Amino acid sequence: MSLPIFWSRTVSLAALAGWVPFATGFVLVLFPGLSPVDPVIFERALLGYGALILSFLGGVRWGIRLQGGAGSDLTYIVGIFGSVAGFITLLLPLTIGLIILIAGFGIHGLWDVWSGIRGRVPPAYARLRLVMTWLVCATLLLILIARFLVNL
Image 1 (cartoon, rainbow, N blue to C red):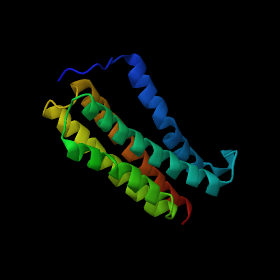
Image 2: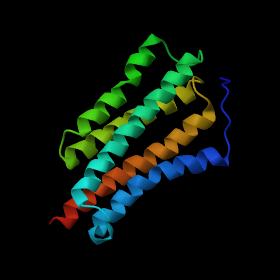
Image 3: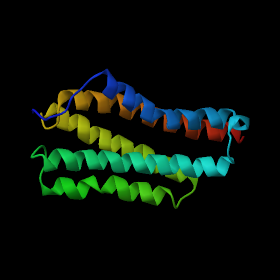
């Protein structure tokens, strides 16, 4: 599939920069004294950031579809599930919210990688999404584990 997307080192660095708030969340669970804000505020911000990124990923799918790319009209409907799931996380305790985010990122990542295998999204995008999905899901899982261990 040929779409007007320019892949460069900048794209990869921007994606990694998007992971930094999740990595910061992990560090602040281990070292809460480093946080410049109340831990509860940061927890809400972390869930909010996850919700924002899930919404962004749905928006990417909308953009690809609007350009005549992969999917059908169902893509528009499925594309909003991440936004809705992200919103729901904001209403829940951190642990449940993180589990929902892990599921949301995992499902979205599978969709993107599967679409790459089928030639419906650019291969470079599918590879980037594979790496970022693993990185984000692993980091969120580490946050869950660290919170459990710190609170023993």
